[in-house]
Image (tube, rainbow, N blue to C red; front, top):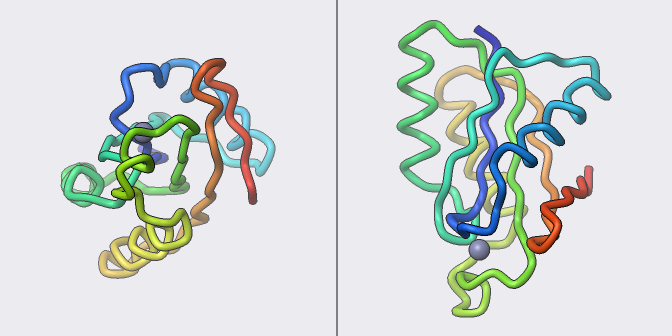
Length: 123
Ligand SMILES: [Zn+2]
């Protein structure tokens, strides 16, 4: 099973299906394909236990993690309260978590326009 794991915020306005579709398009653009695109939540899209627990669960199932992403969004409550980590910091923490399990896969970052759920990758 080829897996992509995407870290996003808990915001209820984020439409998981629309985000999944756009992640799938991105994967196609870089010639990757995932059987499953998992969206994991933490306030602000910060790295957290949801990511690591999901990673470890699917590794037990023999999954092959082929892509990870971190997506911030505008009008974020966590950002307003200064609780959102910088994108690059979350990216680095995900990289550490992957390296700890011997995984080397691309980690992309990007942003979502909350109102439209349009995703823009910065890498
Ligand atoms: Zn948010």
